[in-house]
Each structure stands twice: as C-alpha cells, then as structure tokens.
Length: 285
Ligand SMILES: [Zn+2]
Image (cartoon, rainbow, N blue to C red; front, side, top):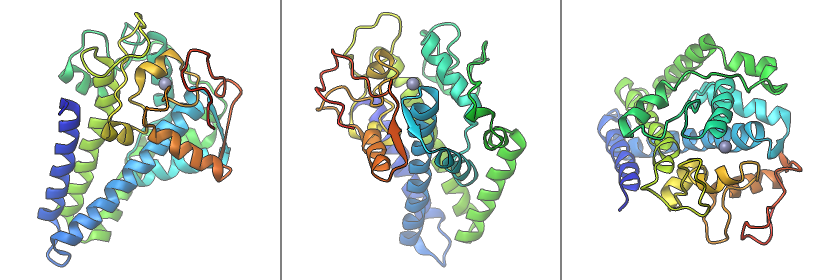
C-alpha cells in the first residue's frame, strides 16, 4: 500500500479507536463511534464543499458560477461549525501557488521541501509576496468577517463548546476535535506534499515547470474532493473538472454535478472550455 494511503487509513482507524475509548459511559463505545463518525463526515464533507468546490473552482479559478448566497452560507457554516480556513488568505495563496508552483513565491512548498518542512508549511506557509485576492466577493462583509482572526477564534471556540455540551464529555469532544484536524492535516499534505513530489502518483502531462502529480486512489480522491489530481489541474487550471479521463474517479465532480441539479451552480465560459488534448470527448456537465 502507498505510504499516503496507509497514513490516511491509520489516521481514520486511530480516530475510530479514540472515539470508542473516550466515549462517556452513558453513551458507550458503539454510540461513540456513531457520533464520532457523524462529526467526521460532517466536517469532511462541509470542508470539501467549502475549499475544493466553492473557494477553489468557484472563486480562485472562476470555473464555476455559484449562487452568491450559497457561497456565503457555505463559508459561514463551515467556518463556524467545521474546520476554520481564512477564505481570503486561502484564495490568495492558491493563486500564488499556481503562478509559482513549487518555486520561490509558492506559499505552500518549494521543490526541495521535504515531508516535515511541508507539514510545518501547512500551518505556517511562506509569506505571500503579492495580493491576488481583490475579487468583489472577497471584499464583501461576509468574507471580511470570516477572514477576521477574532471571528476565527470565537467561531471555533463556540463550536467546540457546542460539541462538548452536545456529547456530554470533554475528553470525547477533544478526541473528535483533535482527530478531525489531524485528518485535515493529512488531506492538506496529500495536496501540498504527495501530489507535489515527483516520486508519488503519475503524470498525464510532462510539465517541466512544476512537480504536480496525479494521485487517483479512492481514499485521497474522496477525501480531497479530487484536488489530488494536481497534474491534470495544473496543466489546465481553468477547467471545471479535475479528472481528464473517464477512467479517473472524480468525487469532487460528482458533488458539483449534484449541486448543478439543485440549481446552485453553473459553468463559467472558461470553466466549460474543454481543451482538445483532454481525452474526455465531452465535459459531461
Ligand atoms: Zn487550483
């Protein structure tokens, strides 16, 4: 088994065991797993929707055109109840990452940065040298509030308190709280380290200027909402889907298609342009 898959499965297993062990007596271990599972899936799904679908394809690349109220609702709900990520800083870092991928100016990782250095950079990225996040929606009150550090602290403290009171055990709440954040760090490492280091994954496009790789197994694709298909994505960053072949499993695209069905999103002109050398035949959106 590949090291990134093994690490991911071990984190999930440890999370399940911690939920069993720390579940308060009135709940018992099986209810502990059930509640822990619900919290895990809630945070993962909301986080994927927020980062991969909305911030990434909706704002950073403008491949998808979401209803504005939906973007704002996802931003607030995720940052209050799920895993906090500053939306303005994220969009800026992501655009700089594409502009300077794996080179000086990429806030995520430089070509020679190893595993531990990149893990540290997930928490403390390189200083951004430019501001590429001047979009109208990012200047809206909702986004300015969501990007405020005081909001971040209050929102996360509130949701921890809520979780603690709901499950009735401090240690149990802490185990879930910390556990899901360790999983999120792994998701971050799949995108920043394993899919930007040439010895992992595969390449469809032989782009010399970056180290972006595709990782296509079930767990990383599902966990990252397909953001681990980095070689495809760096080659055609505006395209609204990250899989470039029917054989590539694409969980993120399934979620976007479902939101389209609900009338929440449509393609932008650039997002729907299918380049000729992408072997899909049709966009299927
Ligand atoms: Zn991107």
